[in-house]
Structure formats: C-alpha cells, structure tokens
Image 1: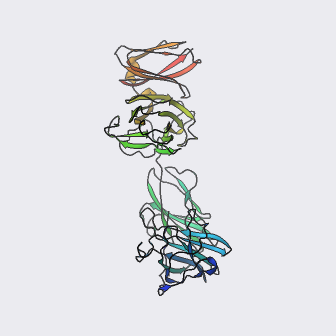
Image 2 (image 1 turned 30 degrees about the horizontal axis):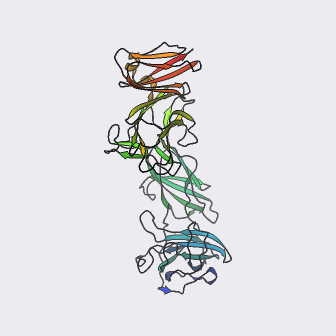
Image 3 (image 1 turned 180 degrees about the horizontal axis):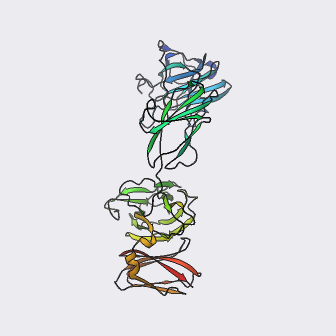
Length: 499
C-alpha cells in the first residue's frame, strides 16, 4: 500500500543537466530543484530490489537538518517516448564499499499503470544518502524533481500488517516504527471516506507501533490515519488513509449459498499449478443446477490440488447437522479424465485445519447433477468451515473435464424435512445387520450416507431412484449412526442403533 505524505512548499531550482555518474564512488550531488538524469549506463548495486537491473546512475544527498526529501519523477515531461516513463530508485546509507539499502520505490500506482516514482525519504541531519536510479524497466533518461521538508517528528513510512486473525468486530494492525525514537503514536479511524480533521475516533497513548480497533461490523470498509508523537504538543503529519475491510462474521444455521450473488466469506486456496475453484456462469457446455452460476474446478493442463472453503458457520456441540449440495462431472472432451473430490470440515479456512473428512469421491463420475448429503456433529461449539478439495492429474486437451458444485446448504438435521422423515421407514432399528428403507408413498431414493456420531463418513450408497433400499450394518461396531437419505422429496436423517 503506497502512501503520499503531506509536504511543505516545494523549492524549485533551475533546470540542471549533469554528467552521468557510473558508480557510488563518482556520485554527484542531487540538488534541490529539477535535474536531468542521462541515459542509465553506470554500475548497478542491487540489494534493494529482488528483480535486478543491469545499470544505474548515482547521486548523493547530505542532510543538513532533519526532514524528508521528496524524489519525484512523476512529471509530464517523462512521457515514455523522449524520456523514460518507468523509473525505479534505491537509496543507500554507509560507505560506497559497504552500502546498506535504506529505502526504495518503484511505481506511483502499478494498478493504474502509473510507473513513474514519487516518494519521500526521511533524512537525519549529518547523514549522507546515496541515490541510484536503475534501468530495470527503462534505460532512457528522465527529469527528477527534488524538494525538502524540515521536520523533527518523523511520520511513519508504512509496513502495515494484521496482527493475528482479524474478526468481524475487532482487528489489530501494526506498522513500521518511525525513526528517531518517538514517544508514541495516535490513530484516528472511521468508516471509509471520513475526514480525519473533523470526524473519526481518536485512539491516543499508543506506546508501540500497533493499534487494536474494536466495535467494528462485519464486512465493512474502514480507514485509519496514524501520526507519531514526539513530545508534548509535538506530532508528525497524519499518514493515511490506510484502508481495510472486516471479514464476514460466521453465518447462522440454516445457511445456503447458490453462487448467484454475493459469495462473501468464501475463499479459494490453490495448492498446485493446476485449476483453481472459480464461480462460473452456465452456458451450453455446463449449466448451473438452478439459476445462472455455479462453482467449478477442473479442465486444466497441470495437476490440480485446490480448495474451496465455505463461509464460517456457527455450529453447536451436540447438534446433528446435514450438509447438502448438488455435484456433477462434466466431460468436456473425451472421457473427461479423472476428477477427485473430498469434503472436509475444520475450525479454519486452511488445509491444516480441515482435520475431519465428511466424504471422499475417487474419480467422481456422475454426469448429471446429483444431490449429495453428509450428516455430522462437531466436538465443541464454535465456528467451522466446510472444505471442498478438488484434485486431478493434468488433463490433456482431448480428454478433460470438470466438477460443478451448486446449491450448498447446511441445516439442522431434524429440521430438514420432518414430513419426509415420517414417510420413510428404516427397519429393524436397533439392528444387528441389514436395515431396510421403504415408503408407502413411492418416494424415490437416490443416495444414502451413513456417518458415526463424530460426523465421519462410514459408507455411502447410490441408487437409481428406487422406492426400497437396504444398507448392511453388520460390519460396523456397536453404536449410534446417522443415516442421511436423499430422495426426490428432499433429505431425511434417521438415527440407527447398531447392536
């Protein structure tokens, strides 16, 4: 995040053209005013940027008082034709034979295509600073405008980062300490766009470069400004706005996502160079189950290992929940290749936290949308995330396919379809072996999943819309199991006791 500091009046000198300086040892003074930098052809020092240049032109500036030196190439004359339109600068301290990178700057705004440079270097009186313009992006010469603002209380220079995981109600943010040992910091914050001179909430007395901002709301945009405190009635200029957005708070149950609109709180992690998950619009090749949009992964020429994480869900210990969704394999070319699919649950939207498996499909092969459902409980009340992990080998162009996911729903099992529960019979119960599922109203069964009381998937069976089905519990240990029945009338969950 780039910040522009408020500066005093610029001091403009006459236009000066100087001979190119090929090394730190032959650097020329960089004067206040406007200087023409010749074609870049000197020695590149490196260390400030990870992407190296091949040449650099060198200058130096010795500070006679504390303050900030503004180095600005963002001028109309630097048009990218006669003069460079893309500059980069490094600032070093120390001796020429032992330089230390002090600070550096590249683009005013990479996002907006503003590739010239405009930044302020904080200087300490008596210190010499070496300034090197390099040719990483362009070797053409250019003009640079230099001005100085004296101050004794140094503003911060950035380095913003969250401390810990931000929540919907509270965030902690840190920044790079200001130089010259300030006594503390002050922060003014408010909703994005507020005027720090007339509005906002002041947090004073911060002794470290860190602030905790509380009383926030879910999925909201905020700004904050920081100033350094150097003594009684002595502060720096405000730096900001620094913007952040609070995450979505956990959803309550029932919670559904059909990918038709806002998918806030959902996240994607791609662990390989293959296909990431994405939200796609249905077309003549792949349609959504309902509406216009669906989530998909696949059809990629590299091996895939990507995760789609749900929004956080507020779940309670002792409650049985059912996750349901529609899943389809689409063979776009050839046989559609191999498409694997795992469903997990964990306390964070990270691979490491997804410790419980709900279901695993090796080479999922259903070519039309099929309702899948998994019942589970959680070991303790809290916030949980459902993870969908897509893995696949590289798909060749003449044999590739994808998996499409739609109409995600998590609900309390007992409340899914009370009418259906009463219409389906599961006998005998308790059982020592076979459980028969039947209905007097010709309800058609297409899938049955069995989980243990910890929500772990034990077995699954698919059916071609039959009115009577059977599940063999004889190989399972004695205990309580949850049987989720998917039918043309909806989803029902039956508790089965195995003797």
